[in-house]
Length: 539
Image 1 (tube, helix red, strand yellow):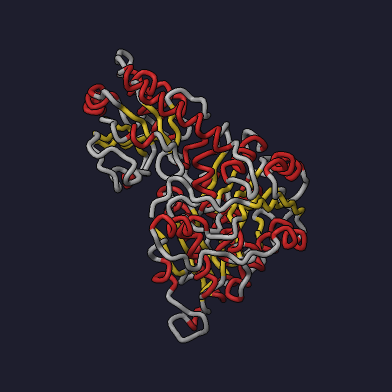
Image 2: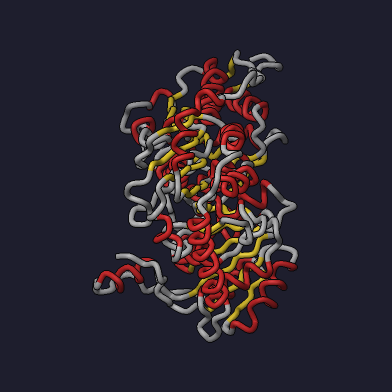
């Protein structure tokens, strides 16, 4: 090889850097040593070493969700890839553009009984829209570009497995620049929407349900709600897009949402979905006409009885709808019905957040978080009881919720916060976790210390897998396996190098959270939490 020639690993990194990749999450293993060697010799991409591959993939998923850009994780063959799968499934279900790069057996051992060998393409196929084995060093750029393009255009997981020895093979491949995209015209126009206009105009009891795809179109949604006379409901992902005081906003729907909103929503005769795929059974109208706006065709009508789907940008489509609805006469009785549900919940929510006592009521902890965090904080919420209490009681300003949406994996809260702080170091980042979820990723407290990540972890410590326990209680099941044997979280945090805080009385909540948020470096707050059955629990 000449002095100017590069090997596969080096060109791979150059190509990723060309597409804007800033970091790679992973755990070092034998089959990626050549890759690690190349990473160590360059400065464009940072390697983030974590304690478990599942955390690496969840961090990549979290980064992709926050930025909308490609995120990358890596692992060795066999169990390395196996451990990535949970985090990759989260990215797959939430359409986060993530590329996984894994080592494979040496070229001469492919297909043999070599240790840890498995057909990786078959192994990952349910999760990866594109997966391939690099079989020639000169194909590295073409393969990486295809993977990156697929991830970004489809919001998909992609995967490349590279034989251990091939990382060091010389290659004639060279970096390819990304094509510039120029948009020439709107995707929809008024003529395309005549039937939609007709349906919306026929509504007497309309409702808007906004999801994550509504980001950037919040003001248009509010304007349309006023002209159309509709209420606004939101999925968990869109909860922080609208301030609690927003006119026409009823809040969330489903478990953890506004408990007064579901009966109102069931009366709706026309529903406009904006960037939403959340349609919780038991909380939705049975006979309403449904119009769905979404950029991705695969989302339209997916599990929802949609009458008309509008494939297009939410802002452009809503602008056209607003122009058409200018002369609409809203149903004032329906507006009052929606307003009553909002007012009832505002009063009840305030009462729940003011509960006192020890152990501390979950809604009281949520209220303290709400009072203390920055208006633009990133809140990484774990899956479980904390999810539904945050959805139910948190009244957002301009915060960002980061969570495991459709995959709903426990253990997401801490990895999400770690990634968020790496991606947006100037933002306040808080991980809101249950004791069970934290225990799944406890070792990666050390990752927060290793990279000196200024995050605050708030633990709802009720000594149980509370959501499952609630369902057992409501369903009449005999409880088994839901009680936890918890460690001293503060002691473990301090042993790892974090600042630890203990809260046992609600009168100490705000002061302790504020102090932890001001601490420079990672901190953990262990909150003694009441084991309360969530009011919306169903078996």
